[in-house]
Image 1 (cartoon, rainbow, N blue to C red):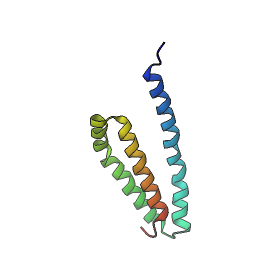
Image 2: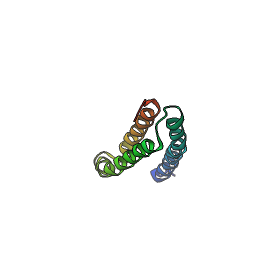
Image 3: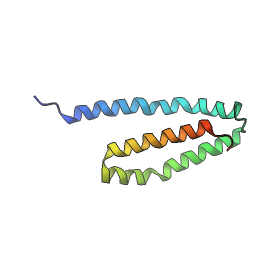
Length: 96
């Protein structure tokens, strides 16, 4: 009996959900880092978070187009890379 690709896709999706769940874990740590180490105000942190949220909303449609043209896998890889770049830029930012 052949393995159905659906079962593999479910397993890959579960693994992807585990790794994307870590992004919610790091958010409070990054905010505390910005408040205490970089010494920015809470208002500046919230403005940065608002810009991040708006950019996610604006990029929702283009990532859907990428997924339609090139497949969901490529779209998820791009999303992961963009999240990585965003978090690294938060960590190494000197001011907002």
